[in-house]
Amino acid sequence: MTGSKINITGRIIAAPLGIITMITVFKMTDWPREQGIMAGIMVMAALLWVTEALPLFVTSLVVIAAEVILLANPGGWGGLGFEVAAEPTFKTILNASVSPILVLFFAGLVMSRAAVNEKVDQNMASWLLRPYVGSRKLLLFGVIGVTALFSMWMSNTATTAFMLTLTMPLLAQINPSDPYRKGLLLAVPFAANIGGLGTPIASPPNAIALGYLRSADINVTFASWMMVAVPLMIVLLGVLGWVLLKLYGRSGQEGTGFTLPVSSLGKRAKWVVGVFVFTATLWLTEGVHGLPASVVSLVPVVALLVGGFVSQKDINRLEWDVLILIAGGLALGYGLSVTGLDSRIVAILPSGAVGMGLIATLVIATSVLSTLISNSAVANLILPIGLAAAYGQPGVLAVMLPIALAASLAMGLPVSTPPNAMAYARGELAVSDMAKAGIPIGLFGISVILLGAMVYMWILLSEKADPLIDFETESHSTMHQLTPCLSKIPVPPPTIYRFASSPLEHSVACNV
Image (cartoon, rainbow, N blue to C red; front, side, top):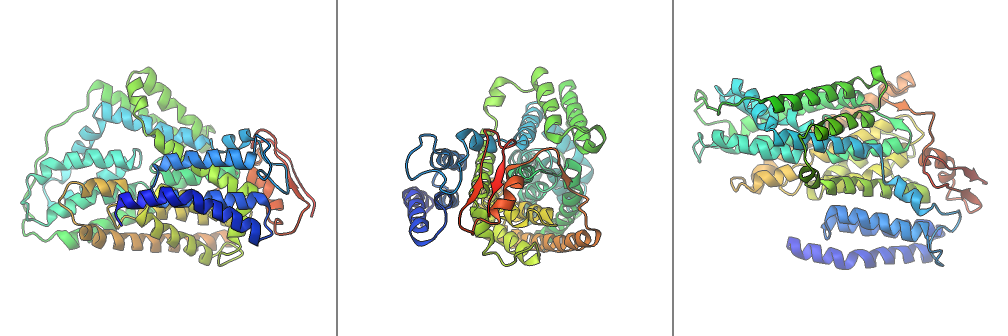
């Protein structure tokens, strides 16, 4: 079935299947009405995201709208809203779709646009690659390292775009029949994907994971994320270079050098670099100055806009669809938790407590699905289930972080990630080229992630504390308040949970 037929099929069947799911739950189970409604919304969203029948961000808007109308039920229509509790207001659901993480990711987009405008990306990449042009092996590792470095701080799609442009003069110096060309081309998207592990702003799954953790009053700092993700990233980049050299490095022309055009940074470009360095320093020293990363994110946004490095037209061209996609995922997670449907789903997972069986199941599911569809959509579907399964137990981060990281490591097909699609569109790569390099690297990465989760759980259980998590005890999230009730939802009413207009200010009463 072609892509267009899949899209049309998805549009036709998504809503009916969602309705059928609701009716099935209503007629064949004793679940409360709100869980049946939420099950239908989740089925519909999953089908739309998997088939990409609608743009991903449009599906997110559909999710938010469906929850507002069907769950909040502002019109007071019969048969909608909550059955065993007072439904949240539409303001509560809209508030739940907004997170400080969106500001963090927005800052990354603005910084990326400023770098492109002032040609910081191309000039610095050319300067950083210059020491490696004398050797093919060094050049391959240089391209991998520089691409990953930029992908940590910029959109991996933008990074791939300018790195593919930068490699064009290098490819022009390589014989078309030389397999090294394919190795150099594959190095760019794969390194961009792996570089997306490194920081919270590097990819949407990272931001989505942090958004869910923040909704549960769990604060993972910028430095804490990097402390876990960067070592994994470095190991995977080394493996990537080794695999590509084994597959495409045999050419008999090792001594052949390359040339790159001379580049330099202008005054405005140096100012942009200065803003980048200052912002990154603040992000990494959150424990010293006490400013959350989302607050620090306002610094580069204001500085670059006031300084004229980013214009109104640039703001209009930012990837707003990604921000809406993240917001829709947060709304979906809120709907699952507030209705208690996440507890139903968690009940079918392999372990009642956080363990390697649970982590492996979620990570493998994430990897398989992300190979075939958008990793952001997969993160939106899997992360709320992982949080519901792990919340209130040791090892929340051991579940959430592997899911987010696994989503960025699925790169075996051109459709797996935008960087893969961009490299494939050059016309020099076959699907088999991408698969025979991307699948082994992805499998190795998943193995390392699971091994790391196992070691982390062992340390966590030994020390009885989580050094990477800062629990924000002064505020109370929806999930934190609801957990005592949601764990008892299988018991018939009266189970009551009430909400005020803000997700941060509500009371919960359980009578079971």
